[in-house]
Length: 201
Image 1 (cartoon, rainbow, N blue to C red):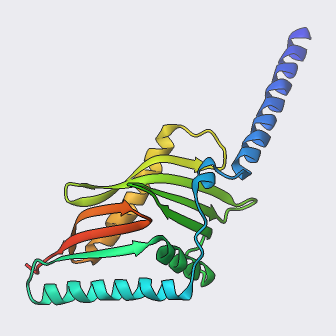
Image 2 (image 1 turned 60 degrees about the vertical axis):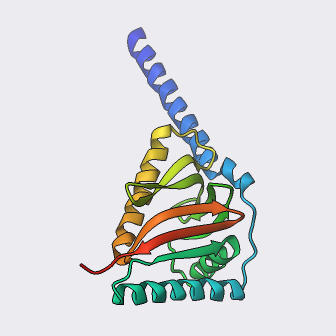
Image 3 (image 1 turned 180 degrees about the horizontal axis):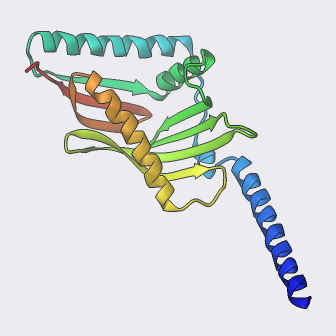
């Protein structure tokens, strides 16, 4: 009888500990990530959206002209923090980035910071990310230095999983562009991408 009571008590204590852990985990999940304190809000504008679109259109025209002429031409694209955040704000307003509820990007000196709110059941997930872009074997690769999900303590393996997911997304987009990217520079609140056009084989 004493053994059964002891087992019931142990099971009860374990159950309470699990509930407490879940409550603490849910609370930490709901908090703002540490990286958010590093991110500076960037005010958007319609002019910045137009500038972003014009730069992309001009780049596409340069690439197309070079490819049609069979030229390996070096081209570059410079995007500012204001331009990319203005474009993202517009896309959010037009519900083009679901399930994202909000996103903000900063360009530091050699790195980028991202704060994003993701629409999830129950409570929105607040994420923070610090990373870099490197050219590895002729392709741009995102390297994650830190990833936050609220204030949950996450193993470093999660950073690698997020890194892999982002690089899969990037690699799926690359075949659509007739460009070999040779360098990506993040500096002075700007992202500069340089590449050489691919000639048709």
